[in-house]
Structure formats: structure tokens, C-alpha cells
Length: 451
Image 1: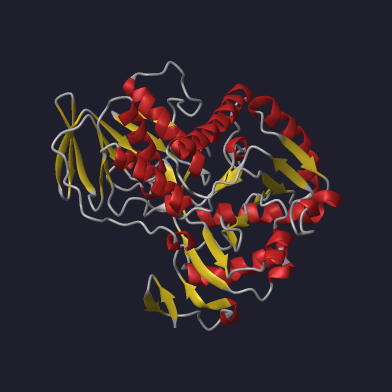
Image 2: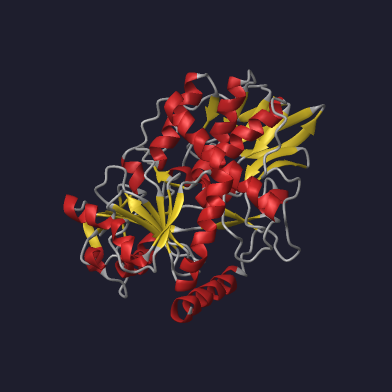
């Protein structure tokens, strides 16, 4: 039997490799061993505040924190415990300008807009660093850069021009790494060289969340757990927000539910595609093996369309590895052996290393593959991190707070006034995902084999 959240659950099925699972295996986010989201003593819902924020993730807390600094009171409402969603389940990679990528399916933005997005993404990294410093957040922040492995030879040929672009737009400290030199960056010969972006790194996502939550609580911001919003009604010049634990009258409402956006706000639900990447963590590694895997303690990704992302844990003792292998939803325990095989392709030296944790959590994809903030139907929103949310959602929440307060003349590049939808997508059925996923997988296979 395998432990799950401290309870017993069924182990691997008959077609699964049980020998990869460590005796201490849990279907549980590895990051939660250091900080587990908790409800604590439930805070009463205030009767009236200036702003109500739905969703206590990175975006929600960053919005509340910045509003407080600007003298505006807010309440943060969450259906679960604060941080229960993707904020404490992510890979903890922080990309800055490296997080801005050419869309896979959607039309590419024009060059001016792409340049502004890249610049703003760089500002998002600076904001994150400033918050960590000002709020004294102990979250294992390592600004050690990101190595993006070239999946194909053609990908590597394009990386030099991309490095030049990142450097000109966002001072990314980017450079290409030739195949013969990549062993200085990654203990693998799997890639055809790669792109090193210096202005990037990784952190412990749950401890970073805890730091943001502590910062909000020090300022007396009401962060209310187990308070799902059941109805939104426009009232006078504001809103009546009805929750399961009471109602609150507010002037403005912020929707920051991201990958957990539901039927309460159908106008956003049909603009967001929830997707579950899967992650695993290995048992503790020897110091020599960890150093071999990541000589410079980088974060890693690759240029595949179906991205693989990985890094050493914040204490440098484990490999944390994530991607999505199949397009039907599976439990983390079912996905773990498939993900393990992908990891071993890159790191054969990890073969035989046990898995201690496997987990998942929703991210939100947008139809134009860009993050968004703005206002729709009278509701403010910061949504759609597309899997790069640690710095981006912090940045969008902060920018949105400044917009609500009327404290900035700068219009963020992600505040376009447009938020794409499609008549064939209702926000509930994701019937098209397997088709798109298999198409992207085929393109990756062709590039790897022939290009």
C-alpha cells in the first residue's frame, strides 16, 4: 500500500513499475513537506471592504498586498485553504524574459507587442526579487539561470537570434551553449546544445506562497479560507459578493482563480483551459550525483512543444521533474512511471532512483497563449499564466492593484483589452486537447528525427 496525504491508498496498477516507488512514496506535493496549505482558524467575512479578491494564489495575494500598500482595504476569498491550488504545486521555476515564448497554435503577436511583453516579464522577475527581499521571504531563491535544451538541431540554430533578442529587450544575460560545452550546464548528452538565460532561477513555491501570505497577514488583510463565492450581484455602485460563510459589499471585484476558474464567472471560464502538468520528486541523491545532474544548480526546460521542466530541489538533494506524457487525465501515481521514463531519457544515471512524491495541479492556458489582466463585465481579472506563473501572476496582481488604485499611467503589456474566446469552446469540455496534444507530439517527433 502507498501513502497518500497521510492516508492509505491503492498502489501502482498491474501494468505499472512498482520498483520505481520508494517505500516512503506519497501522492502528495513534495513542497508541502515544508509548508502545507491550511485553513487555520476561519476568519469572519467582513461586511464591507473596498475590494474583494476571489482566489488566494500568487495573483490574489499580490493584488491584496499592493492594494494595502496603497491604502486600500481588501478581502481575499478562497474556496479551499489559501495556496491549495497551483501556487504551492508548481515546479518553482522562475523565467523572467525566458517565460515569453512564441505561441504554438495561436497567431504570434506583432513585434512591438512581443517586445513589450518581454520587457514586462523581465520586470516581473525584478518585482519578485524585491518582494523576497523586502518581506524577508525565506524560500530558497536561487538566481542561477535557466538552461533550455535544444530538442533538435534546428532549434539550436534559432537560439542565437533568440538570445540576442532577449538581451536587447530584457537584459536577460542570455547566450547559447554549444553541444560540446553543455556538460558544463547539465549532466546529460540528450540535447543539441541549448540556451542559457542568466536572469532566471528557481525557488520553493510553497515557501514563497507562505511568505506572501505572512506579508498579507502582517498588514491585517483578511484572507478567508473555506469561503467559496456562490454569487456575484451588482449593487449600487459596487457588488454584493455572496459566500458560503456570509456576504460582503465591495466596490470592486478581482477574479484571480486561474486554473480553478468555474461556473461562477462563465465569461472567464470559456477563455481559460485548465491543464494538469504532472511532477515527481526523487529520493535524496548523493552530493556527487546531484552535482553531476546540475553542475551550476540551474533550472531546466527544453524547446519541445510539449515542454519538460526540471531542477534540483531548493536544498539541492532531489531531482524535481515535470511534464505531461499522456493527454487523458490520470492520477499522479498512474502518470509517474511514464514521467520517470522521460526523466531517464535525459538522465540515465538516475535509473534505479526511487520516487518519493508525485502530484499535479491545474494551470490555466489561454486561447492566445498569453497572460491577461484587465476588466470584463465590470470584473477585474488577472488570469492565464500558461504554466509560467510564479513571477508572472505576482506581477499581474501587483499591476492590477495599481490600476484599481489609479496609481499608474503605465499600461502593462498584458492589459490589452482583448481576451480571446472561441465559439466551439464553452469552458467545460476539453474535447480538443488530445488532438492538439497528439499533433504537437508528432511535430516534436519529426523535428527530433529529421531536423
